[in-house]
Image (cartoon, one colour):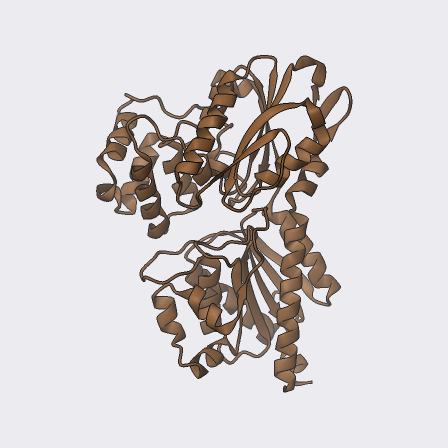
Length: 454
Protein backbone atom coordinates (compact mmCIF):
# COMPACT_ATOMS: atom_id res chain seq x y z
CA UNK A 1 0.00 0.00 0.00
CA UNK A 2 1.48 3.40 -1.00
CA UNK A 3 1.35 6.50 1.19
CA UNK A 4 -1.71 7.95 -0.59
CA UNK A 5 -3.69 4.74 -0.09
CA UNK A 6 -2.76 4.52 3.59
CA UNK A 7 -3.76 8.14 4.25
CA UNK A 8 -7.09 7.77 2.48
CA UNK A 9 -7.82 4.48 4.24
CA UNK A 10 -7.27 6.17 7.61
CA UNK A 11 -9.41 9.16 6.57
CA UNK A 12 -12.26 6.84 5.61
CA UNK A 13 -12.10 5.12 9.01
CA UNK A 14 -12.06 8.48 10.77
CA UNK A 15 -15.01 9.73 8.71
CA UNK A 16 -17.08 6.80 9.97
CA UNK A 17 -16.03 7.49 13.56
CA UNK A 18 -17.07 11.13 13.22
CA UNK A 19 -20.42 10.10 11.72
CA UNK A 20 -21.07 7.71 14.61
CA UNK A 21 -20.26 10.45 17.13
CA UNK A 22 -22.91 12.62 15.51
CA UNK A 23 -25.46 9.81 15.80
CA UNK A 24 -24.67 9.21 19.45
CA UNK A 25 -25.34 12.86 20.29
CA UNK A 26 -28.95 12.62 19.15
CA UNK A 27 -29.83 9.35 20.87
CA UNK A 28 -33.58 9.72 21.60
CA UNK A 29 -33.40 8.32 25.14
CA UNK A 30 -30.66 10.74 26.12
CA UNK A 31 -32.58 13.55 24.41
CA UNK A 32 -35.63 12.90 26.60
CA UNK A 33 -33.51 12.76 29.75
CA UNK A 34 -31.89 16.11 28.87
CA UNK A 35 -35.23 17.90 28.56
CA UNK A 36 -37.62 16.11 30.93
CA UNK A 37 -37.36 15.84 34.70
CA UNK A 38 -39.96 14.17 36.92
CA UNK A 39 -40.49 14.58 40.67
CA UNK A 40 -43.29 13.37 42.93
CA UNK A 41 -45.08 16.69 42.36
CA UNK A 42 -44.45 17.69 38.77
CA UNK A 43 -43.09 17.12 35.29
CA UNK A 44 -40.54 19.72 34.19
CA UNK A 45 -40.12 20.24 30.45
CA UNK A 46 -37.20 22.63 30.14
CA UNK A 47 -38.52 25.76 31.91
CA UNK A 48 -42.16 24.64 32.02
CA UNK A 49 -43.80 22.92 35.00
CA UNK A 50 -46.81 20.59 34.87
CA UNK A 51 -48.21 19.77 38.33
CA UNK A 52 -49.14 16.10 38.46
CA UNK A 53 -52.03 16.69 40.90
CA UNK A 54 -53.92 18.45 38.11
CA UNK A 55 -54.10 15.34 35.93
CA UNK A 56 -56.09 12.15 36.37
CA UNK A 57 -54.25 10.27 33.63
CA UNK A 58 -51.11 10.51 31.53
CA UNK A 59 -51.52 9.21 27.98
CA UNK A 60 -48.72 8.75 25.43
CA UNK A 61 -49.18 8.88 21.66
CA UNK A 62 -46.75 9.44 18.85
CA UNK A 63 -45.38 8.58 15.43
CA UNK A 64 -41.96 8.40 13.83
CA UNK A 65 -38.81 6.34 13.46
CA UNK A 66 -37.44 7.46 16.83
CA UNK A 67 -40.50 7.42 19.07
CA UNK A 68 -40.03 3.90 20.52
CA UNK A 69 -36.89 4.85 22.51
CA UNK A 70 -38.52 8.19 23.36
CA UNK A 71 -41.50 6.29 24.80
CA UNK A 72 -39.17 3.94 26.68
CA UNK A 73 -37.45 6.91 28.33
CA UNK A 74 -40.82 8.33 29.37
CA UNK A 75 -41.94 4.98 30.80
CA UNK A 76 -38.73 4.87 32.83
CA UNK A 77 -39.30 8.42 34.10
CA UNK A 78 -43.03 8.21 34.75
CA UNK A 79 -43.47 4.56 35.67
CA UNK A 80 -47.04 3.56 36.53
CA UNK A 81 -48.26 7.14 36.11
CA UNK A 82 -48.65 6.27 32.41
CA UNK A 83 -52.21 5.00 32.01
CA UNK A 84 -51.79 3.83 28.42
CA UNK A 85 -50.51 4.85 25.04
CA UNK A 86 -50.12 4.03 21.36
CA UNK A 87 -47.27 4.89 18.98
CA UNK A 88 -46.60 4.07 15.34
CA UNK A 89 -43.04 3.29 14.24
CA UNK A 90 -41.42 2.16 11.03
CA UNK A 91 -41.23 -1.60 10.64
CA UNK A 92 -38.27 -2.93 12.61
CA UNK A 93 -37.94 0.19 14.78
CA UNK A 94 -39.86 -1.05 17.83
CA UNK A 95 -38.66 -1.76 21.37
CA UNK A 96 -40.21 -3.70 24.28
CA UNK A 97 -42.49 -1.29 26.19
CA UNK A 98 -44.76 -1.75 29.19
CA UNK A 99 -47.76 0.57 29.07
CA UNK A 100 -47.41 1.88 25.51
CA UNK A 101 -48.59 -0.20 22.56
CA UNK A 102 -46.38 -0.23 19.47
CA UNK A 103 -47.84 -0.42 15.98
CA UNK A 104 -45.60 -0.75 12.94
CA UNK A 105 -46.26 0.90 9.60
CA UNK A 106 -44.69 1.44 6.20
CA UNK A 107 -42.27 4.23 5.36
CA UNK A 108 -41.93 6.31 3.22
CA UNK A 109 -45.09 5.01 1.55
CA UNK A 110 -47.92 4.57 4.11
CA UNK A 111 -49.64 1.21 4.56
CA UNK A 112 -52.46 -0.50 6.46
CA UNK A 113 -50.31 -0.84 9.57
CA UNK A 114 -49.94 2.92 9.73
CA UNK A 115 -53.68 3.39 9.24
CA UNK A 116 -54.54 0.98 12.07
CA UNK A 117 -52.05 2.57 14.42
CA UNK A 118 -53.24 6.08 13.63
CA UNK A 119 -56.86 5.15 14.22
CA UNK A 120 -55.86 3.86 17.67
CA UNK A 121 -53.93 7.06 18.36
CA UNK A 122 -56.94 9.17 17.37
CA UNK A 123 -59.12 7.03 19.63
CA UNK A 124 -56.82 7.68 22.61
CA UNK A 125 -56.75 11.41 21.82
CA UNK A 126 -60.51 11.68 21.41
CA UNK A 127 -61.20 9.99 24.77
CA UNK A 128 -58.85 12.37 26.60
CA UNK A 129 -60.57 14.80 28.91
CA UNK A 130 -59.79 18.15 30.47
CA UNK A 131 -57.99 16.49 33.40
CA UNK A 132 -55.78 14.30 31.21
CA UNK A 133 -52.22 14.99 30.11
CA UNK A 134 -51.37 13.75 26.61
CA UNK A 135 -47.67 13.46 25.78
CA UNK A 136 -47.15 13.34 22.02
CA UNK A 137 -43.86 12.05 20.64
CA UNK A 138 -42.92 13.16 17.14
CA UNK A 139 -39.89 12.37 15.02
CA UNK A 140 -38.90 12.07 11.41
CA UNK A 141 -41.01 9.55 9.53
CA UNK A 142 -44.11 10.61 11.42
CA UNK A 143 -45.73 12.04 8.31
CA UNK A 144 -45.80 8.68 6.54
CA UNK A 145 -46.65 6.70 9.67
CA UNK A 146 -49.43 8.90 11.04
CA UNK A 147 -51.86 8.16 8.23
CA UNK A 148 -55.62 8.71 8.46
CA UNK A 149 -57.11 9.66 5.08
CA UNK A 150 -60.23 11.86 5.04
CA UNK A 151 -63.53 10.22 4.18
CA UNK A 152 -63.65 9.48 0.47
CA UNK A 153 -59.90 9.07 -0.03
CA UNK A 154 -58.57 5.52 -0.01
CA UNK A 155 -55.20 4.38 1.28
CA UNK A 156 -54.36 3.31 -2.28
CA UNK A 157 -55.00 6.86 -3.49
CA UNK A 158 -52.68 8.26 -0.79
CA UNK A 159 -50.00 5.70 -1.59
CA UNK A 160 -50.04 6.62 -5.28
CA UNK A 161 -49.88 10.33 -4.42
CA UNK A 162 -46.96 9.78 -2.05
CA UNK A 163 -44.99 7.90 -4.71
CA UNK A 164 -45.54 10.72 -7.18
CA UNK A 165 -44.38 13.31 -4.67
CA UNK A 166 -41.30 11.33 -3.65
CA UNK A 167 -40.25 10.98 -7.29
CA UNK A 168 -40.82 14.56 -8.43
CA UNK A 169 -38.13 16.20 -6.29
CA UNK A 170 -40.46 18.08 -3.92
CA UNK A 171 -38.91 19.36 -0.69
CA UNK A 172 -40.03 18.00 2.68
CA UNK A 173 -41.86 21.28 3.33
CA UNK A 174 -43.81 20.89 0.07
CA UNK A 175 -44.42 17.18 0.59
CA UNK A 176 -45.77 17.74 4.09
CA UNK A 177 -48.03 20.57 2.95
CA UNK A 178 -49.78 18.00 0.75
CA UNK A 179 -49.83 15.37 3.51
CA UNK A 180 -51.41 17.77 6.01
CA UNK A 181 -54.29 18.44 3.65
CA UNK A 182 -54.97 14.76 3.03
CA UNK A 183 -55.18 13.76 6.69
CA UNK A 184 -57.41 13.64 9.76
CA UNK A 185 -54.41 13.66 12.12
CA UNK A 186 -51.70 15.92 10.71
CA UNK A 187 -51.55 19.70 10.46
CA UNK A 188 -52.77 20.29 14.04
CA UNK A 189 -55.71 17.92 13.83
CA UNK A 190 -54.35 15.55 16.50
CA UNK A 191 -54.32 18.48 18.94
CA UNK A 192 -57.92 19.21 17.98
CA UNK A 193 -58.85 15.58 18.62
CA UNK A 194 -57.27 15.70 22.09
CA UNK A 195 -58.88 19.00 23.14
CA UNK A 196 -59.62 19.92 25.96
CA UNK A 197 -56.76 17.78 27.32
CA UNK A 198 -53.34 19.34 27.95
CA UNK A 199 -50.88 18.26 25.27
CA UNK A 200 -47.08 18.18 25.57
CA UNK A 201 -45.19 17.47 22.35
CA UNK A 202 -41.59 16.23 22.47
CA UNK A 203 -40.08 16.60 19.03
CA UNK A 204 -36.97 15.24 17.32
CA UNK A 205 -36.44 17.41 14.24
CA UNK A 206 -35.74 16.01 10.79
CA UNK A 207 -36.52 19.08 8.71
CA UNK A 208 -34.45 22.03 7.55
CA UNK A 209 -35.14 25.01 9.79
CA UNK A 210 -36.73 22.86 12.54
CA UNK A 211 -40.20 24.16 11.65
CA UNK A 212 -42.61 22.59 14.13
CA UNK A 213 -45.49 22.56 11.65
CA UNK A 214 -43.38 20.54 9.18
CA UNK A 215 -41.77 17.94 11.48
CA UNK A 216 -44.04 14.90 11.24
CA UNK A 217 -46.45 17.25 9.44
CA UNK A 218 -47.12 19.07 12.72
CA UNK A 219 -49.97 17.04 14.26
CA UNK A 220 -50.10 19.14 17.46
CA UNK A 221 -49.18 22.65 16.31
CA UNK A 222 -50.95 25.30 14.21
CA UNK A 223 -50.57 24.85 10.48
CA UNK A 224 -49.44 27.78 8.38
CA UNK A 225 -50.12 26.12 5.01
CA UNK A 226 -53.39 26.05 3.07
CA UNK A 227 -55.34 23.96 0.58
CA UNK A 228 -54.49 26.58 -2.05
CA UNK A 229 -50.75 26.07 -1.48
CA UNK A 230 -51.21 22.31 -1.70
CA UNK A 231 -52.89 22.67 -5.07
CA UNK A 232 -50.19 25.04 -6.33
CA UNK A 233 -47.41 22.62 -5.35
CA UNK A 234 -49.03 19.70 -7.13
CA UNK A 235 -49.52 21.75 -10.29
CA UNK A 236 -46.01 23.23 -10.15
CA UNK A 237 -44.50 19.73 -10.20
CA UNK A 238 -46.92 18.78 -13.00
CA UNK A 239 -48.42 15.81 -11.15
CA UNK A 240 -51.89 17.23 -10.52
CA UNK A 241 -53.46 15.38 -13.44
CA UNK A 242 -51.88 12.10 -12.31
CA UNK A 243 -53.60 12.16 -8.91
CA UNK A 244 -56.72 10.19 -8.09
CA UNK A 245 -59.96 12.08 -8.69
CA UNK A 246 -60.81 11.73 -4.98
CA UNK A 247 -57.68 13.66 -4.00
CA UNK A 248 -58.17 16.43 -6.55
CA UNK A 249 -61.81 16.82 -5.52
CA UNK A 250 -60.87 16.98 -1.83
CA UNK A 251 -58.24 19.68 -2.38
CA UNK A 252 -60.49 21.74 -4.64
CA UNK A 253 -63.29 21.61 -2.08
CA UNK A 254 -60.79 22.92 0.44
CA UNK A 255 -59.73 25.73 -1.89
CA UNK A 256 -63.40 26.71 -2.33
CA UNK A 257 -63.94 26.67 1.43
CA UNK A 258 -66.31 23.70 1.37
CA UNK A 259 -63.92 21.79 3.66
CA UNK A 260 -62.43 23.43 6.75
CA UNK A 261 -58.70 24.08 6.39
CA UNK A 262 -56.15 22.80 8.88
CA UNK A 263 -56.44 24.58 12.27
CA UNK A 264 -54.54 27.86 12.62
CA UNK A 265 -52.98 29.57 15.65
CA UNK A 266 -56.23 31.03 16.96
CA UNK A 267 -57.80 27.57 17.46
CA UNK A 268 -58.71 26.91 21.11
CA UNK A 269 -56.87 23.57 21.20
CA UNK A 270 -53.47 25.24 20.90
CA UNK A 271 -53.98 27.22 24.10
CA UNK A 272 -53.47 23.91 25.93
CA UNK A 273 -50.49 22.71 23.85
CA UNK A 274 -46.76 23.02 24.52
CA UNK A 275 -43.86 21.82 22.37
CA UNK A 276 -40.12 21.39 22.82
CA UNK A 277 -37.39 20.31 20.43
CA UNK A 278 -35.39 17.57 22.13
CA UNK A 279 -33.02 16.78 19.27
CA UNK A 280 -31.78 18.65 16.18
CA UNK A 281 -29.32 18.31 13.33
CA UNK A 282 -27.14 21.02 14.89
CA UNK A 283 -26.60 18.86 17.99
CA UNK A 284 -25.34 16.06 15.75
CA UNK A 285 -23.12 18.48 13.83
CA UNK A 286 -21.54 19.88 16.99
CA UNK A 287 -20.77 16.40 18.33
CA UNK A 288 -19.33 15.34 14.98
CA UNK A 289 -17.16 18.46 14.97
CA UNK A 290 -15.88 17.69 18.45
CA UNK A 291 -14.92 14.17 17.40
CA UNK A 292 -13.18 15.50 14.29
CA UNK A 293 -11.17 17.88 16.44
CA UNK A 294 -10.20 15.01 18.74
CA UNK A 295 -8.90 13.16 15.69
CA UNK A 296 -6.74 16.09 14.64
CA UNK A 297 -8.97 17.90 12.12
CA UNK A 298 -10.08 21.53 12.17
CA UNK A 299 -13.89 21.32 12.19
CA UNK A 300 -16.09 23.74 10.25
CA UNK A 301 -19.89 23.54 10.27
CA UNK A 302 -20.95 25.48 7.20
CA UNK A 303 -24.71 24.91 7.31
CA UNK A 304 -27.46 22.78 8.79
CA UNK A 305 -29.92 23.95 6.15
CA UNK A 306 -28.71 22.18 3.01
CA UNK A 307 -31.41 21.53 0.42
CA UNK A 308 -31.48 20.94 -3.30
CA UNK A 309 -30.85 18.18 -5.82
CA UNK A 310 -28.39 15.73 -4.25
CA UNK A 311 -26.06 15.47 -7.25
CA UNK A 312 -25.89 19.25 -7.64
CA UNK A 313 -25.29 19.87 -3.94
CA UNK A 314 -22.44 17.34 -4.08
CA UNK A 315 -20.70 19.29 -6.86
CA UNK A 316 -20.79 22.48 -4.81
CA UNK A 317 -19.48 20.74 -1.69
CA UNK A 318 -16.60 19.10 -3.57
CA UNK A 319 -15.73 22.48 -5.10
CA UNK A 320 -15.42 23.86 -1.55
CA UNK A 321 -13.15 20.95 -0.58
CA UNK A 322 -10.90 21.54 -3.58
CA UNK A 323 -10.73 25.23 -2.71
CA UNK A 324 -9.55 24.33 0.79
CA UNK A 325 -6.80 22.16 -0.68
CA UNK A 326 -5.59 24.80 -3.12
CA UNK A 327 -6.02 28.06 -1.17
CA UNK A 328 -6.67 27.03 2.45
CA UNK A 329 -9.86 29.06 2.24
CA UNK A 330 -12.14 29.14 4.27
CA UNK A 331 -10.09 26.81 6.50
CA UNK A 332 -6.70 25.12 6.39
CA UNK A 333 -6.23 21.35 6.15
CA UNK A 334 -6.44 19.00 7.89
CA UNK A 335 -10.11 19.98 7.94
CA UNK A 336 -13.49 18.39 8.54
CA UNK A 337 -16.21 20.38 6.79
CA UNK A 338 -19.72 19.47 7.91
CA UNK A 339 -23.11 20.19 6.44
CA UNK A 340 -26.53 19.12 7.64
CA UNK A 341 -29.87 19.11 5.93
CA UNK A 342 -31.83 17.03 3.48
CA UNK A 343 -31.40 16.95 -0.26
CA UNK A 344 -33.83 15.57 -2.83
CA UNK A 345 -33.58 13.28 -5.84
CA UNK A 346 -35.64 13.67 -8.98
CA UNK A 347 -35.98 10.11 -10.25
CA UNK A 348 -35.07 9.65 -13.88
CA UNK A 349 -33.97 6.02 -13.94
CA UNK A 350 -35.08 2.63 -12.67
CA UNK A 351 -32.26 2.02 -10.18
CA UNK A 352 -32.15 1.70 -6.42
CA UNK A 353 -30.74 4.26 -4.04
CA UNK A 354 -31.37 7.26 -1.83
CA UNK A 355 -30.37 10.90 -1.59
CA UNK A 356 -27.25 10.21 0.49
CA UNK A 357 -25.98 7.50 -1.84
CA UNK A 358 -26.68 9.69 -4.87
CA UNK A 359 -24.76 12.54 -3.21
CA UNK A 360 -21.83 10.18 -2.59
CA UNK A 361 -21.83 8.93 -6.19
CA UNK A 362 -21.88 12.47 -7.58
CA UNK A 363 -19.07 13.31 -5.15
CA UNK A 364 -17.03 10.36 -6.40
CA UNK A 365 -17.30 11.61 -9.98
CA UNK A 366 -16.23 15.11 -8.91
CA UNK A 367 -13.32 13.73 -6.84
CA UNK A 368 -11.62 11.66 -9.55
CA UNK A 369 -7.87 11.66 -9.03
CA UNK A 370 -8.05 13.73 -5.83
CA UNK A 371 -6.02 11.77 -3.28
CA UNK A 372 -6.63 13.88 -0.18
CA UNK A 373 -10.41 14.28 0.13
CA UNK A 374 -12.98 11.83 1.49
CA UNK A 375 -16.72 12.49 1.19
CA UNK A 376 -19.34 10.84 3.39
CA UNK A 377 -23.09 11.26 3.31
CA UNK A 378 -25.36 9.47 5.76
CA UNK A 379 -28.93 9.59 7.01
CA UNK A 380 -29.05 9.75 10.79
CA UNK A 381 -31.98 7.32 10.81
CA UNK A 382 -29.82 4.59 9.29
CA UNK A 383 -31.96 4.23 6.18
CA UNK A 384 -31.53 6.11 2.94
CA UNK A 385 -34.51 5.88 0.62
CA UNK A 386 -35.88 2.36 0.12
CA UNK A 387 -32.56 0.73 1.10
CA UNK A 388 -30.88 -0.83 4.13
CA UNK A 389 -27.98 1.64 3.93
CA UNK A 390 -27.62 4.96 5.75
CA UNK A 391 -25.51 6.32 2.91
CA UNK A 392 -22.09 5.84 1.36
CA UNK A 393 -18.48 6.99 1.40
CA UNK A 394 -16.35 8.06 -1.56
CA UNK A 395 -12.85 9.29 -2.37
CA UNK A 396 -10.69 10.15 -5.36
CA UNK A 397 -10.09 6.50 -6.26
CA UNK A 398 -13.74 5.39 -6.14
CA UNK A 399 -14.41 5.94 -9.84
CA UNK A 400 -11.17 4.19 -10.89
CA UNK A 401 -12.00 1.18 -8.69
CA UNK A 402 -15.43 0.96 -10.25
CA UNK A 403 -14.08 1.10 -13.81
CA UNK A 404 -11.61 -1.66 -13.00
CA UNK A 405 -14.69 -3.80 -12.32
CA UNK A 406 -16.26 -2.85 -15.63
CA UNK A 407 -18.72 -0.42 -14.02
CA UNK A 408 -19.70 2.92 -15.57
CA UNK A 409 -20.25 5.38 -12.69
CA UNK A 410 -21.99 7.91 -14.94
CA UNK A 411 -24.50 5.29 -16.05
CA UNK A 412 -25.23 4.31 -12.45
CA UNK A 413 -25.90 7.96 -11.65
CA UNK A 414 -28.10 8.39 -14.71
CA UNK A 415 -30.21 5.41 -13.61
CA UNK A 416 -30.37 6.58 -9.95
CA UNK A 417 -28.71 3.26 -9.06
CA UNK A 418 -26.28 4.47 -6.41
CA UNK A 419 -27.09 1.64 -3.99
CA UNK A 420 -25.90 -1.07 -6.35
CA UNK A 421 -22.87 1.02 -7.34
CA UNK A 422 -21.60 1.28 -3.77
CA UNK A 423 -22.69 -2.24 -2.88
CA UNK A 424 -20.34 -3.64 -5.53
CA UNK A 425 -17.51 -1.56 -4.02
CA UNK A 426 -18.39 -2.41 -0.42
CA UNK A 427 -18.66 1.32 0.31
CA UNK A 428 -22.19 1.47 1.71
CA UNK A 429 -22.64 2.69 5.28
CA UNK A 430 -24.74 0.07 7.06
CA UNK A 431 -25.76 1.01 10.61
CA UNK A 432 -29.10 -0.77 10.95
CA UNK A 433 -32.01 1.19 12.47
CA UNK A 434 -30.49 3.94 14.62
CA UNK A 435 -33.90 4.82 16.11
CA UNK A 436 -33.12 8.50 15.75
CA UNK A 437 -33.70 10.92 12.89
CA UNK A 438 -32.32 14.45 12.56
CA UNK A 439 -31.84 14.68 8.80
CA UNK A 440 -28.52 13.92 7.09
CA UNK A 441 -24.84 14.48 7.77
CA UNK A 442 -22.60 15.50 4.85
CA UNK A 443 -18.90 15.37 5.62
CA UNK A 444 -15.70 16.26 3.80
CA UNK A 445 -12.38 15.22 5.33
CA UNK A 446 -9.51 17.13 3.73
CA UNK A 447 -5.78 16.66 4.10
CA UNK A 448 -3.12 18.89 2.61
CA UNK A 449 -1.32 17.68 -0.49
CA UNK A 450 1.85 17.48 1.57
CA UNK A 451 0.24 15.07 4.04
CA UNK A 452 -0.47 12.49 1.34
CA UNK A 453 3.07 12.69 0.01
CA UNK A 454 4.89 12.50 3.36
